[in-house]
Length: 238
Image 1 (tube, one colour):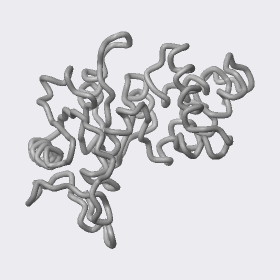
Image 2 (cartoon, rainbow, N blue to C red; image 1 turned 90 degrees about the horizontal axis):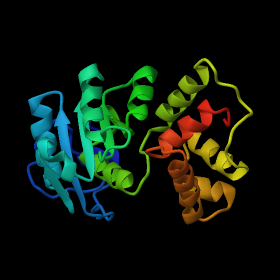
Image 3 (cartoon, helix red, strand yellow; image 1 turned 90 degrees about the vertical axis):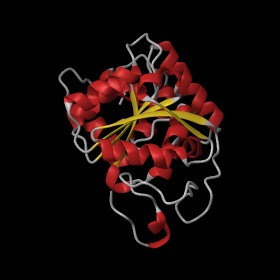
Image 4 (tube, rainbow, N blue to C red; image 1 turned 135 degrees about the horizontal axis):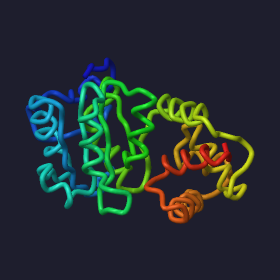
């Protein structure tokens, strides 16, 4: 993980063990989003796993449980340098079968191909963080976002996912079983906007946007908003 200059220079590296347990948001302030969250994590190497576990345990409101106890966690974090089949299997292991009682999964990786990104989303991964752009405080914030039902994905990965889906055989724009409002919401999410950004663009409240997404996800048996965007593209809405 790279250190950044400027205000975020104090950000912890994902492979480091902290000198002190206190964890701060970038810029030196305390992380004010203290929603309690129970995490479980696994990594592709022992050093990364031990360092991440030590750092995350020092975050306010965060409890870390062993991977073997992932069924009691709120969010599972899978860290890896390369996205291999083993990495994706670990993610799928935590997410559970389609109708199972899995937990939301965050991948923290150096990079990810469009093919692996599509595979991961299809199998329950709700967010992907790029190791070179984040520290442990970002992982905590992303975990809390996932716990609230959001899908933490950098805009570059959102665009990559959209383009990959649109390139698949059988994609025919212009026909779908979604309402006009649902299409508007999903289109803006596909452009990388947050829930707040979508609400502002459409002049709705955030609660309305969340209700729209909940309706789509529930109606079609999806796991999260990223899968909802994928569904809309595959069914010709976007």
